[in-house]
Amino acid sequence: MSELRSALDELTGIAFGDLSEDALLDLVGDLSVTANRVAAALTSAVRAADRREAYRRDGAVSMKAWLRGSCRMAPEQATATVSTGRRLEQLPETAAAFASGEISAAHARVITRAMTPGRLAKAADAGIDLGLTDGILADLARATAPNETARGVAQWVAGVDPDGTLDDAADTRRRFTMASGLDGRVHVRGEFDAVGGEYLHTALVALMNGDRPAGDARSHAERQGDALVALARGALDAGGLPTVRGERPHVRVTIDLMALCAERGAPGFSGGSLGWAGPINPETARRLACDAGVARILTGPSGLPLDVGREQRTSTAGIRRATEIRDDHCVFAGCDAPPEWCDFHHVVHWAHGGPTSCDNGALLCERHHTGCHEGGFTIRRNPGTGRWRTYRPDGTEVLSRAGP
Image (cartoon, rainbow, N blue to C red):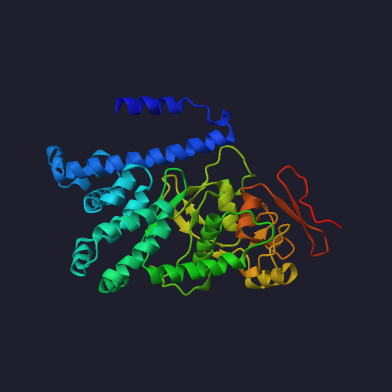
């Protein structure tokens, strides 16, 4: 272990940016294989400790609990490591491929998760040579990515344990967790049964393919994230969700009036706060306040509310409708997102004295509304026309790059 640590210390001293492209790619490949071998060694060591119940020495109730507590492993990683180690004892070919670094921990987990004791017993009763199966699946894992290996494993399961596939299909448990991180972002994680996942995927694909303007440089993951938010926004805007404590569910933003009215980037003002996700930048609060219901709350020196004013919409249905007829889509240069995906944007924010009117309003999709607030872009309409111009934070205009 001391030699391994010394080698890792040497790696940290390498200036990766100085390597040639071939050398860099070779190094990445070598490190990938090495990482697989280290993961295999960890799995074997965990299995040895699990077999001897070494975790009891530290008062843990199981090897999984010890890994979570002493190694700070995530629960799913601890479960996978212990389970994989136990089942690899019945799969020497897969274990050897893992130990040599030819397959990853994900490959090993895909194979071992399907090799339950019940299925191994059914395979033996059916006269299926487990050693041959182990070799075939190990070779498949060597040649394919984990998701492709999973398809081959599923075919084996269907042939050996058709009733078990029904049991798997009957497991409709769905898990989805959200947590507000220390970095100010929200982190999500989840898993769904096949049918539930298909519902979600179909809805997201519809939104992703419908909102794909020309020149869109977002990655698939970014587009999928935007589509998930759009799905939630659409459900909230439609008003069909159950009421919560007597009122429609809504996103709540709290911000001091002086901070809301301050100019962009003005020092000395704290941001707003979302009801669940926590603190946000003042400009983000101003963006959300562009097209929202606003209620005034007076507080005393101790911060306790003294008076709550009646909620008012910043944009009436009539003003919104007239703006949609004029603009037809998001007015940011190069975007044609339809009105139903757009917010009503105040060109001069109402907190800065701008009127809530068709003349001072514009349609902006969420991405470009964010760009105009947090990103520093601005839009301006030619007086008396429906033509909009877009300007970068440095004041230069975003012009069409199309040829004549």
